Image 1 (cartoon, one colour):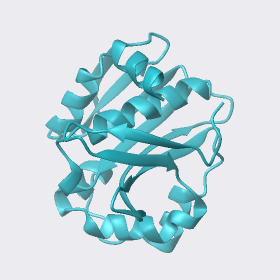
Image 2 (spheres, rainbow, N blue to C red):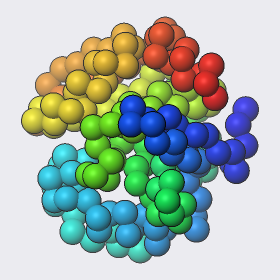
Image 3 (cartoon, rainbow, N blue to C red):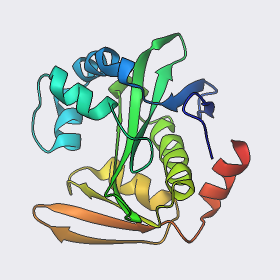
Amino acid sequence: MTTRDQVWMLNLSNGVEVPTRFIQPSDAKALQRFHHRLSERSIYLRFFELVSDLSDERARYFTELDGIQRFAIVALDPENCSEIIAVARIDGEPKNVTGEFAVIVEDQWQGIGLGSALMRLLFDLARRHGFRRVFAYVLSENHQMLALVHDLGFPAHSRFEGGATRIDIDLTVCSDALVSAIAAS
């Protein structure tokens, strides 16, 4: 099992190495700063509405996690490790093997493989935490996220549900993408 203070280095397509670790309660203010740097479109695609400010209460909700059924990893700016540039999270129910996942990447860091690398690590950690399946609701207009999930190579099923596409991923079948991520960590 991984430790709460473990750091992983993600290698991006542009050659940059990005430090990644579990989110901590002390990250609440950094998470709020991250949220302010996101474009309205990125916020809308993640939350399905425009959330202009991340309140202190919501920042606590996103950073004070049990580390077992609810956990998140953050990617940190390699030039300033006190700043978050991406977040990936799993929210499961107690004693459940299924969890909802979400990923958001700061706009200037999109398109260079950070989201893919973060999701591979998140899914590996989810498997290590006993999750067998994960799911996400994705707006149909979020072509980047739909393509990213498809490109990871996991057996996935999708269906339109409540105005969004629900994507269900079976983590019990290890994809080549995950095997590569596991070998690198």
